[in-house]
Length: 185
Image 1 (cartoon, rainbow, N blue to C red):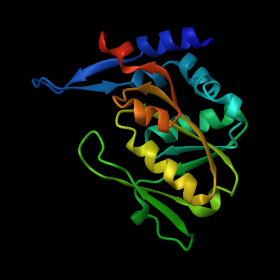
Image 2: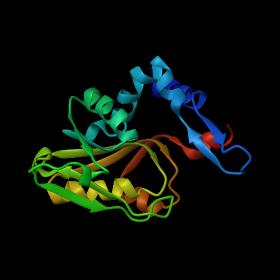
Image 3: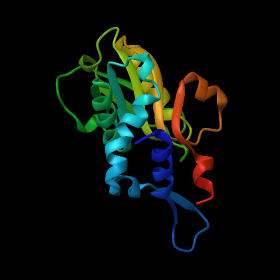
């Protein structure tokens, strides 16, 4: 599927949901995984945003990134590594690297970690996630790449909701959609 069609299908599969009686709403992108055409194409679509960088590893955060990261890694012929949000729950003898996010959209800091042995010195690493709101998780993962001795090549997300152009540049962030594409829905 070409990028234009993928973007259109992503918009069609998205909706804002409200919390019964409140004025707040939340993003619901469960329709993306319900559409087999999106599932078949989203990995290649995200991979195409930074394919010229020839990433060898795709690094994604636990939860949304764990769904998308392997699809992008497959499309690139790259390895997949997950950054864990619950390092304390994982007791083993591996050496772990940890980085803390700046404040996220809910006003909290979060620790992300990965096994040091999974990113080799010189690995070209692409960060992948579903949504970039503050960029905090992506910034923490970039720190993890640096600490592991990898080479950060960029970030690919489905939806760019960043308000900071400086963070977007620092992350070399490319997206399939901008949040403005979804506001009218």
